[in-house]
Image: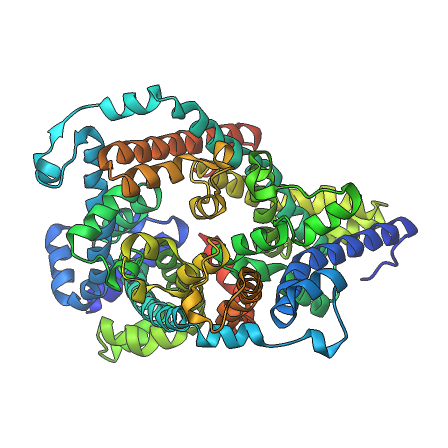
Length: 293
Length: 329
């Protein structure tokens, strides 16, 4: 049934659309500004706004980043850390979710309690740091990957998802003599692609964007992930002059560091921009499954 | 095998009706051991998560006892001397205490009060967009900032708010002099909270959007026939539908009231805005990892956790009272 909106309703809807449009504008403008800024002279961008004069555009910032050793190494490190973290986290959480989804799994409640407690209590920064240190994991990849590898949230989501898989599949396989493990990797895992994608998305994005663990656990600059390099460029304003050729004036250095800021933001967001539409259709699904329980 | 299938079936009926009841009846020790022997692979699947949790979550929980000791590397956690509540007393009596606590509470309190309604409004507005395609596209834009890293967001804040940045160009145009946003303690909280809303409001609305999808259109039709206008329908139909979700989100947010986004506050700190930007978490980091005062710092961290738990219980109680017994637990 469809009702023709009254004049008042139309008025409210108009305001509604206007506000939504404003919200989108507020969200998009800073992002667009940064992208434009990465191709433009910073002063030109500030004084003229969006310019239609091709001479205002250049790719100097990108050239600098590609020749900047810290940036390229940070990028490669970040890819390595993010991919390995994603693999480990997804495997660990999906595997743990399966037994917990079986109703008569002995010890289910006990294990679940062990996991749930960690959602509310934790040792905190210092004891965790001391542990990582005493395990000899400082300045290794493991310090970034292992402490966060178990996501209780993901385990709960996986468990809820597995519970929704029709039990008949499970039983049919059992009658045919399949072991629990075989049921897991031949029936459950292939059916779980949606949640595996969602987990992978979150794990990758989370690790890609993380800087804090790297900051406290890594001393060696060669191991720095991209976000730590970005931090020194964007926030601490440290641009290594040795990576640039022929700089005489301080102004030039300042100008270059300004250009580099915009370009480095864009470069660092590239993997996320590429993944964004691809994972888009799983967004709501993931949150929906998660909010069920 | 048959036996397992049988219990499986029986229990499913029970667990469908009432969650955990099945397990309680699941039989004797002997049966359990048989099950474990028959299904060792299930336990192997559990093992990695379990071992990692015990090592990286439970051992640090045990390590918290250094908050009550004078930890030194030479003596180790066990060997260090007990000092009881000395570190806590020292922290509470220190001149920093009040400032740190108030900074932390103000930042998260105002963040919660200002940030909580925005996603709800957004979801209610999005819900009125009839064309699915348009709605999807708007959502796509609104979610995007959530995926940007803290470092980049803070970097962008510095770019836009620098004395020669875009915002200050506009301000200078009107008032003649720029505002030193990042070095004036007065602005830290506003910048922190507003940028937080900018980044997360869209994404946080997703859960309300999902809840609103469950509203029966017939309800709206019936209300329209009865002469309710759009605002009345939103107020009396849409809003009550998402009320339980609002309660849960609010309680969880309040439970994390001390766990202010440490990383962002830390990155936004400049030497000059410290009077408002130094919060308990950043202080723990500085005292503990930079100055190496592990025990004192662990005690402050524990204090923070303690306040969080109290808040969670308190807010849950209040919401339960206000919300006809629909709390988190």
